[in-house]
Structure formats: C-alpha cells, structure tokens
Image (cartoon, rainbow, N blue to C red; front, side, top):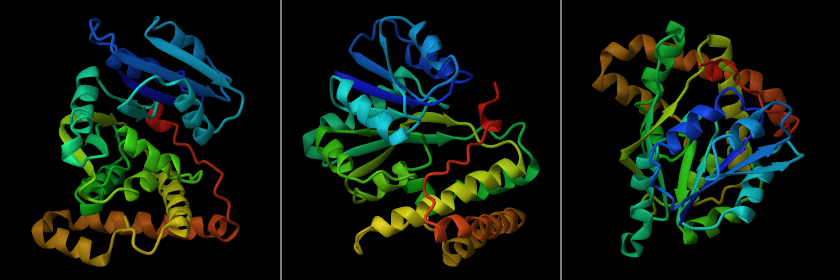
Length: 282
C-alpha cells in the first residue's frame, strides 16, 4: 500500500483541490491518505474529512510541519510513502508514476519527485521573469526540492527520518541522496502555485535564504549544494541570451532577500515562517 502524508496548517482554501485531484480514481483503494492538521484554526480538518473514508484526518495542537510529518509517519500504513504539501496539486496517476521506480529494488532509487509545473498567468511581470530563470537552473531541474512532493522507499524513509527538524525539509531531503539515488520522474507532474506579487516573492526568497543557511550548518562536507553560482547564470545566458532581463530580476531578488535574511540568520531564527498567501488564492 502506498501512503500519502499531507501536513496542513490552516489550508482550508486549498486542501480540497489537492484531495480532489488525489481521489480522481474511485477504483484506487490501495492508497492510504493521511492529512495531519497541525495547529489549525480554520476548517482544514472538516474539509478534508468531507472527502470520505479514503482520507484519514489527524489533528495535533502544535503548528509545526516537522511534528506533522512525524505524526503522519506514526499513522501511515505503507510504503512507498509520499509527502505532499497541501498547497500543490497532484493526481492519483502522478502518485503511481512516482512510486513505480521505488518498487524496483534493483534501480537503486530511494527518492523521487515529480516534474514541476508553475502556472505564471496572473503573476506580476517580475515574478514571471524570475521563474523563467529559476526553473532553468541545473540544481532546480535536478533536485527534489521546491516541488512540494517527495516520495521515498522504506530505505529512503530511514535516511530522511534521521534528519534534524529543518525549515527547508525538502532541500535537506534532496541533499540526503546522491544523484543516483534520487530521480525526477518526468511522467509525473505537480502544479506548484507561485507567488503572484513581487513582495510575496521576496518573502519566499527570504525564507529560502534563511532555511538554506540552516541546512548548510547541518550538512556534512561531502554533500552537494543547491546554491546558484555566477557560472550557472553565465551559462544560462550563453544558451539563451533573451533571458538577460530575467537574470537581472533574479539577481535583484537574490540580493534583496539575502540582505533581509541576514538578521534572522545572525539571530539563528530558523522558526519564523514567512508564508505567501497570494499563491493560495483560488
């Protein structure tokens, strides 16, 4: 049995669209869906429970994604196990595509993630320009992070279960596997809703800068990095000169976010979650 764990903190506006997508195949009764409502003060639990018996709702009082993931593990029934953020959209067929390679012990694959689809309609032009660059970067294309979905085998789960509580849990999980142990499954797709405004994008990038710094403090020296280098941007411009304006926007966002993140990093404030509400608009 495949288990899907969905941590959800005040996701009443979006949890329904994810669950409806996962429940598109009524004959699929071999998938165990666990929604962990953590510290919710809205109707997340009620909306999830209304989706019927295939969805089990667990409620914990603490608003913590890490605690929600651990609680989900305690109630999940099988492997492969798929961890899904509540604000993305993933279908049942995508789940099957993700878990296929994890069932083949000979493949050596311990963790998978879907291809990322970012709908940019309705976003400010600088947001669109930023993502046109960001999605082309090698670390972004090849890593499992920034997709809102990671699927693991039992052995893969044992690997990430040993990680400490980190804000960038998906980045830490991606870096926990070698390139041969992780796989982006192009046949599976997840819709990741981006921020719609420049201020919301900056909030996300501040959070990313702070959380990346936290991950790097816990990394071993042999682990890779997901940071973007000047060489990455230069190579991108050589291949696609038309992206010059986008690279300028990308660098501007990175500089602003890094400056605004410095205070939190110096104070070791790795608990303040700068949430983007614009991506949760229906």
